[in-house]
Image 1: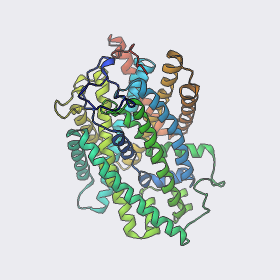
Image 2: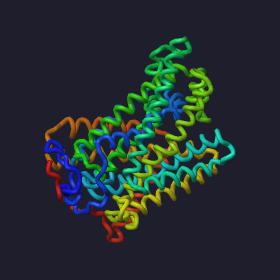
Image 3: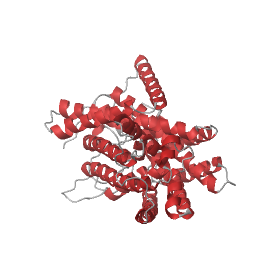
Image 4: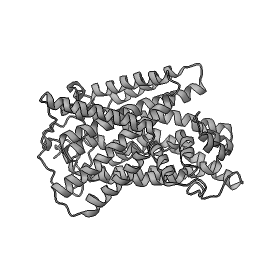
Length: 474
């Protein structure tokens, strides 16, 4: 239970369960509200995320971009339900690492954490690189590497100052992104009303000339990048003053709100694409399809506005929370001695995992500079990011069934069997239809994790979790 010095909610809303019952010390500061969690999740997903990958998703889906985002939202909704259930059982930082480790077994947790680490480590680098490239295109006097360093230093300082500072800036950035999105939607609808649309009004949802399930689910494996982030809320389980039920609800609410925004903006944009056939045939190597569409709808100023907003949203707002989430994952694994112990150090006054925060910044800088030196740097990183998360989500769904149905003998068939099984099957199909390069690298990364795990056993360092037999009283 929380100490008297923490938040004092009403009897109907019990305080967030403490980590002491699992053998840990409460070191992170509990200060975040439900609203903070909701905004954190929305910022992590980026309400205008489709701006940056619109052309890629449009081509991959044969123009049915709204359908792809709807399927992605449904798939992630089942995953959010599983996150919500496991957050109630194990209200700790670590996300899938914690849930699979405690819900199934510690070695499985290590592998799940190792796999999702691929996603969490690469995401900040990808975001910084995309944003830096976008800013350099507008201010060519400042090279990409300089923008990259600037974004990383700024975000590291903000995260070092504490989670409250991050939460305050999140609110400002969310309002700014929603204003830009509203401007685009109003101008886009007006343009459609004036006859600038192409194709039927339902083609973004279904086009018989291009439709196939394998095509659509292959596109989902790209579009799901926009949804990654709602799960990052679970990383803040030890920094929220809310109870665990509201933690889970914040994930579901953030996912639902973001999903609606994604579908609406891509539906409008898909109807306004000036060269639909050309985009499907040749793709969007420059990543400018959405900005070209915005210019067609409202003029060059709208193209610049949406592009700059994307750069700032990805390079500052999204990267800020991505760095925070990644540092919490490293902290959780280091606390269990499954990563070097120095990553588990908490700053005595800031109450943040300071060494993990600095390591994420260093890795993001190194990867960003390296990928910037490659012609295919952005596309290569994009293909790698999603595989780790979706594979780890598979383990999450299994952990719900094992923990609740097998161990707890739950008879809540919907939440503890049907929903996780449906979520598992949808994600499995998406993973199977994912980019071949992403599959190869992702499986190679998993193989490295297996080798490390085997080495740990041979050295007598079998993965263990503190208080593993302790159950949460619900």
